[in-house]
Image (cartoon, rainbow over all chains, first blue to last red):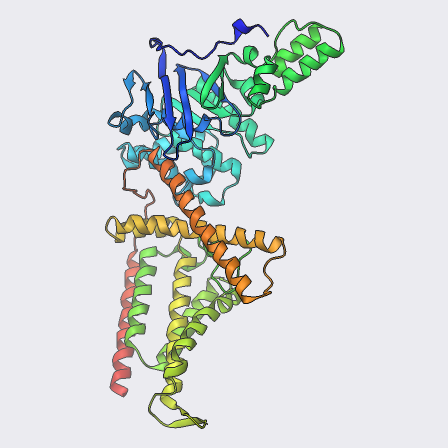
Length: 292
Length: 270
């Protein structure tokens, strides 16, 4: 792996970029019990991109996401969202711009019906009931869950709950959506559906998506940029093809390369070929294999 | 929809919700406000009436309605055992102290107990009142959609009492689900058989302690997810409750009139 391809996390106080939505500048967070959530972490979210925050369990991914929505404030460093620095005063309105889809949908869905739950955010934004209902219906249709409107959330399947959770955030029309392990505990069909929805949120609605995941296969398929987190800090950053071909880096953080990367590397090793490219999706892999 | 329960005698909230969501009986189509008013009328009736005949008639009526709504009668009788035990535990001493015509005496060297007709009536009356309250409440819950119940709580109670009700009602389901899953896990590893009272008590104490801790943990997570969507202490329900129709007003008026007439008639007979 060429080290130049993986950009180390910047430690200097970098200047905001014009198309930047979120700028996390050397932020640290220590929990009341003394454990460190994130440490000296620098991170940017730009317009119309999907970023995968990859790391092992307990590496600080979820803590980072909670900072983006204002649920947590950094102990040191700063976070700016849409050009505004987040502090105890400004964090109150942050939920309008940055939505969070939590890992456990059961914690997110509490209302008596799916429609009530999806309308919860829009009503908190001050929308009228009619507007909130319209928004909620549009969001449910966008994720293909319009048939669940009158269902009780706790009786839905895991995949349906995840769809409703996403609809609940989409109904608030945020500019950025942070998703914590969006496909964990889902069957392959629902995982694929969620994956397609994430891509559609970016392509059709222009929403920037931040995904916290340890599923590198998912990250390799949909992410524009990948950040590797270890002990609360981003230790590497780059495109999937840059990051996922660094076996030493991945092994160091307790992750394993995506299947596509593994297959391609095995193919080249067994057939005595040189790694002439870095495929990370099935289409790219097929292109290289057929070419070979 | 329903999960295995810790005990067949505890009302199964999942089953209750299943019937309330999927019921197609006439009572399911009636406005929840009408049913609530009728339920309140029944409770008021129970607190004032002492006639066993009227209570039997009312219980028969409620049972018939329950049966006509295709609700599970066998389950109802299973669930009735707890209120019956509760009433019996309360009146087991009182019933021997009622003055009246002696029916049965129990003589012991240190005490003499006599059951009178009034003592027997007291037991019957209290049992009927408990069973009518339970059956009519279940009838209301099993024919009223969860969302409507939620919206009614929101409309009836002032804030923050309505917020507490709204959150705790949902939490009841979650907590019971948690207790059930823990008991299943406990049984799956050979637990559940009474080996010794002290061991059994210790195990149940551990289960309840865990439920408390997990509930607290879960409440924190739910609160966090609500905050992330702008919750600031007030939750407004979005569901509209179907209003009462004129025919329902007429029905309630008739019901109240019959009840008042029967009460007056009965008091004049006494």
